[in-house]
Image (cartoon, rainbow, N blue to C red; front, side, top):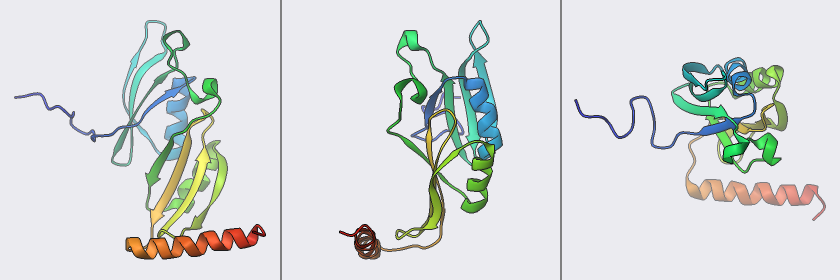
Length: 160
């Protein structure tokens, strides 16, 4: 049997997170997002070298930061430019669960003009997450029209 270029259970794009205290991150993602641990490989000193988790139908890889190798977590960098997006059946419940587990709420869950009920969080390891439940199928034109109206309303509220 030929080896598949994309391993079974993976997608073409798979997030790979670098975490300070990767073992703690695994426990946290299980508690906050219901992640399931599929495999963990450790370094000789017991740190998580590579782990594969699954949230819903999607894999996530993660490992311990290694500053000597230039592999830094958001905590070492001081920020991240990446947001990991989750589509779920019940955004309100998962958002509350994640905040209860220790995420910082950065954008409350609200209905958005593009048709999703959506909110944003930051986990204790510095990774940003957005969580949404898709509520409406909209055309590009309708999203554009609603977006223009939403930005006009925000500008009005800010006094612009």
